[in-house]
Image (cartoon, rainbow over all chains, first blue to last red; front, side, top):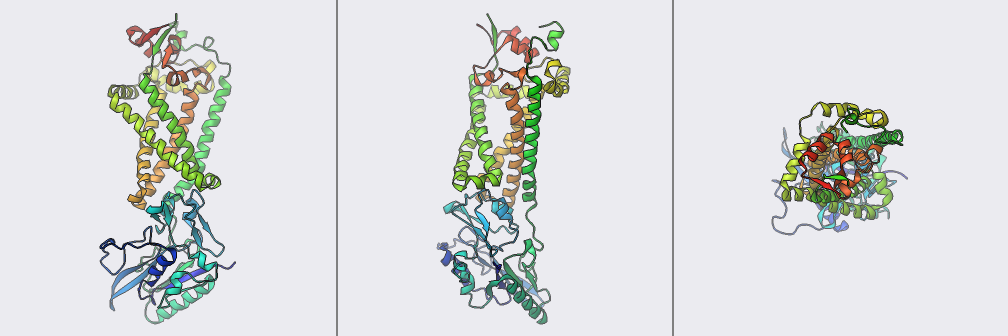
Length: 270
Length: 223
């Protein structure tokens, strides 16, 4: 099966947040309705970061450049890495990779241990308190399985998002980067082609990775790698100790204290 | 008539028993989560039950020693004094000979020891340090939604490090303490029995301590 991907074009995004709303609506994620429930971010951004009930967030980043102040919008959601660190650490196999590249988190299997958040270089999965599970974008796998686009893509009025075969999305993204560079946006880059083995959510970064808050050359957290090393080391350590004690046991069989006294008996004190 | 020395109080034995059972459950339930292959094989429902058990027994693992500390502070001080007692020549000699003793017990003569053998003092200190570390990091992990991912990551790593230490030390502790090691057979009765040790056993294991106890007669029982 061909790999599929979303292509988000920050240069076309108007930050209307329609995708945010549609994501919540399709996936039945509630929003805070109380006054001042969300911390004020100092901008039009809805909330500081993703949370247990929010799988997709449009970030507002202000760029002060030669043209004046410009907004660098960013789509913050799971990138659906080809080498997902979250999947490796999940202790119950709640995170899986579908043939089309989607990294799916099955909330019915999730036990809420938060290891996926700890392992993700982007800290994307968030704990959903009310259900004791982690939550993240599933690329609307229920929709795509029926030949439909992810909800966010379908609703985007600016045409800033597209969904299709990954190689086609990469080609479209690269073509758009060429156009942007021709228009004078020298730092424009396509994110996700090779990062983390190749992502299934690509990003046309009009002002370059850093301005859009994208991690350059992301890697699974070092601590996660250390933990992965510790598991075989633990096995070897325990096996060595048990093996050594086993040998000790065999050599001590038949031990009789009266025959082999301690130092004090040897000294005639016992 | 046999002379016995009361080595461990009832409170110490009860607390040790609670901690031992808690530790066993924590190691098994933690191991399932520690090795994802096992957790995935067991299924999320089983893992969820084990995670709840892990938390229940984590509470008893932490609370039981604290109860002992509150209700028997002198006992706690006594344990600490023994653990940090200055090493004499016999202590050093014991430690030097211990590896040989493990593999050639029939031909190794060990020196007399005080209330806690020098090797056990080291193992106990490592075990206590690892237990404190695993308890603190465990509480942080339990409160995971209120800490940053970075704090969670570091706590998880330290929790795993402490787990490895405890698992390895417990193998040795079980081997010696339960008397699987032939020269130590019968020692399980000290913590899982009436806490008494016969004069002969006491002289064999803790010569200096036995002499002090027999001289004072305070904890000596004749039956």
